[in-house]
Image (tube, rainbow, N blue to C red; front, top):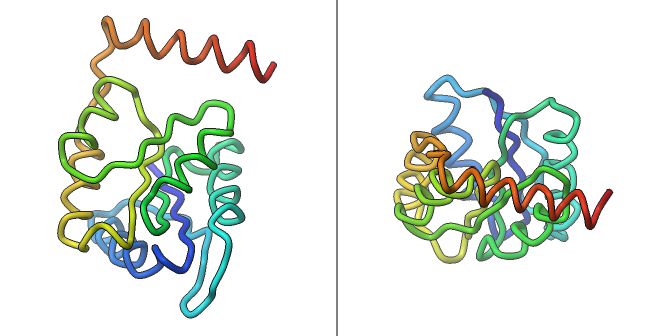
Length: 149
């Protein structure tokens, strides 16, 4: 598995902590920016990460901004992306189990590193349950096809 990472200035420090955590676990990462000390628009970096998923270069993504909300909005504009802003273990786990979420969005202004690492761990370990949830995800995929061709 290879995970795209992207942040704006508000999520930079959290991104760096999560990147080190993932690499320590042997998970390959593609850092789509931003760099230290930059003040940037999260949209630009979210796009880079989503393009890496669209091309098949990355399997999943973790995006960071102040709250995770802006990055989730950007990510969900791309075909095949199911992004969720998560602030606790339960939402991270359910985003995978029930929604087959492939893009986790975290907030550098709302989470401490230890909390974020727990959320990332829960998200990585949870597996899509299928069943009634698969029917719902399929409806989301059909809606995406209808609206975006």
